[in-house]
Image (cartoon, rainbow, N blue to C red):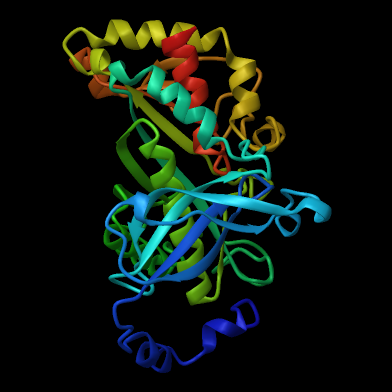
Length: 363
């Protein structure tokens, strides 16, 4: 089983023996942030003398930005600014996880700290009570880069049996999914659900509904938890938007959006107005919907495998081949939300949220 990492083979019973040791009144706080790739998370842990009750109780910290593609070695210290606190499902209570913003030496937000500008927009549109729900697709791989559960040589059966599938020949890696689900619930992440996806070894979890900036904070911590669970189990979770070439589905991060007026009677009119605004900014949004300015999504948004073509904007009721989908129930109720199906699995949620809010509510 060379595809499984060596560290995952450590005796977990021994690990639990140490994790169960008392730690007095101290609290371990793990600081989590987005690195210079705009899609990977980093983390480091420190000891506090007592359990923090609010985010203000967690001090600023720093890290070496030259080792995370965020600074030059000659001026490498970066500030970690705690933004939202969660429970730690790995070290357990009273220990904490905290999602952080990253500031440069001059205390200006780092280039890949998209939370700061997103939060400004969320404050501007606060009166609209903007809700998001994001559907995070991901694919499981061995540490050898081979899709988890796929034959060593050749391919599994074609797509068709795997979506929401049950059974050893359909569902590859459910242990990851269920461990991650419980870890999210323990942490306080607003995880909404999960399912097996169309491609074998591909899964999805949903986070939300969350209001405003909360959405990005919860999704990033959910991603951190996913990578940590996979680390313990010896496999890798990939957010690549098109992990396998050929007749296989890609991976997106479909984003569901609603305002207070969209959720009220007659809200469909407000949804249609928002979609009209989105249609005029299609190219701009595509550039914001993956970390490489649309290059990753170019491999995924082909007009096949339940996607719209990257060059075209479309919308429709219950249409999974459209850029924007209006769920059938919303079409019947004349109120609710719309789904933007364009964001890639490796998108920065803060960039997606900012683009949608700016276009629909500020432009």
